[in-house]
Length: 110
Image (tube, rainbow, N blue to C red; front, side):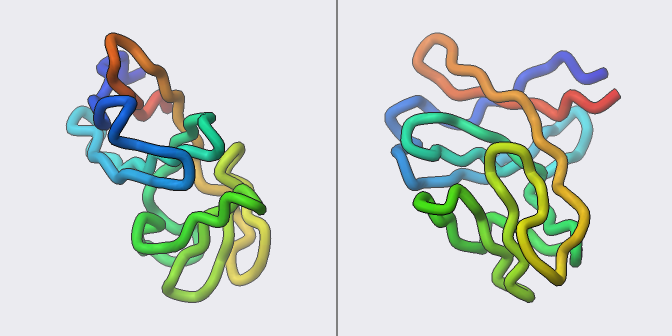
């Protein structure tokens, strides 16, 4: 398991309705951190339907979803579950923490 946290940005740099991609150097995983009305979530920055970055998509704060621009698949930012076709599999969700004025995440899969 990866115990190293990846710095995303300062808390003031990721406002509600915004998202920020980062790269977990330890595991080689692209991660997308999203601010949904002040709550922070992190998903793998990779659509489960096609290997395409979700960070190129659109965050819908009202629905709490992020849409992949490649084929329109949408995922719940809170748990990573697929909300519509063509995606049927969820995307992995990762922990997020705020510490010392910064936002941190990591790929915690074993």
